[in-house]
Length: 141
Image (cartoon, rainbow, N blue to C red; front, side):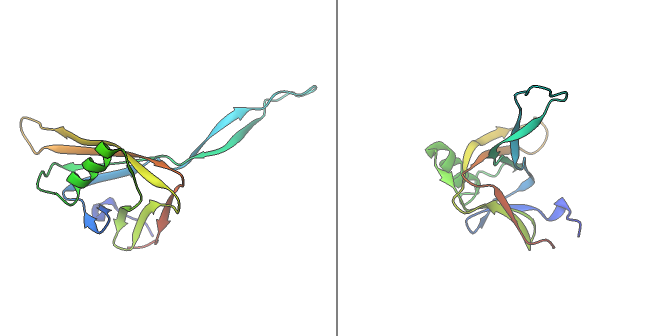
């Protein structure tokens, strides 16, 4: 089943973060290293270094200074430098991603507000996933 972004939203704990219009995650990556050549090798060989980088997340939307249970709480987590584990990125009501057991998301960007002269204010958030990779729950709408 294909999933559209139109039903997406972000929750922190049991609270929906107000006014969000977009979220993204980079996914897992692993550094690739070149193996040392051995006598007689004619082709370079490469291998993964064995250490998974769990990636990062980001989301943005309309700035809502009255969202005390969402945007304000995430900004407080960023300022405190604490990792959070109960952030959920929803694609639909029955499909979401969260950090795996033992992992946290360190909010690295919050309260990044852009106020264009004509239009709604936009707020950006970003976080680094650490300790475990993001996991998908559900596959439908």
